[in-house]
Image (cartoon, rainbow, N blue to C red; front, side):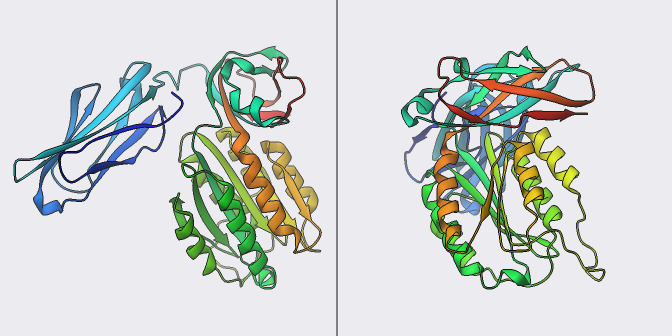
Length: 367
């Protein structure tokens, strides 16, 4: 399934699908619809899967969480019908593909993010069959590839500690440039941090709304780099599909003894969480007080990239470059039968396209 097939059957006021915003489903999946009609005018909303009724909601929120393991592999159709007190009804359907065996006993699902560069037209045609993935030298059977056509979910985590005041206007412009390169189907969450971590926006595809939220950002306080990074990865892990975390900072982990009740995490915590979820982390650092080795380690171990910026004027260019390239990110999945705890070497190839440059985590830690 290469695109979201959304069919509105309209005989009056519309009903639309809020969640999911994807074409491939696995595990617990929330199905939510939005209505223009007032809740007082609604008798109820009935939800169907493959033409069978599965749930009936009489009041908001009009949603149901389904376990996709209960349904067969392959094409699947969601449908919702709203019934109004005036006797009318309206329907919306969503067609996609279900992966009921996403989780299996005695094996673990491994997700490997891959960024492909070297030829736009070639990259756009890549599919599951074009990739060869090896774990510890042994070829693996790929079961899933989220291609560049699937929506991308990006979490931007921006340093808002006191030392960022002079750089913040340039960072904001860089974030604007980054958003402009994303497709209309992509969604972005913005998080800020000083000694604490806070959410600026939910996942949102409305770029103008995101820019208004970014415009209001201010800088003050210490730097809880690892707590912020861990929170950003955890937020990205809550959605299915192609995901990435982008963190921008001008410093290193720096918490004063009086910082109080803050989220304390380590570099190892962040890397292992990102690897386990298959989420690449892209790091950007500027200024004399950054720790380049830390930023490079985070990016390298997760399949991302590190940008060490020499001056403020390069910030916007780096954001724009990354926004352009993330469009060519893939997410490969396979079931590993390895029960050995520890590091495992990963190799990804495109045998028919040897000139492509592939960026991915070269090793993963299995628990």
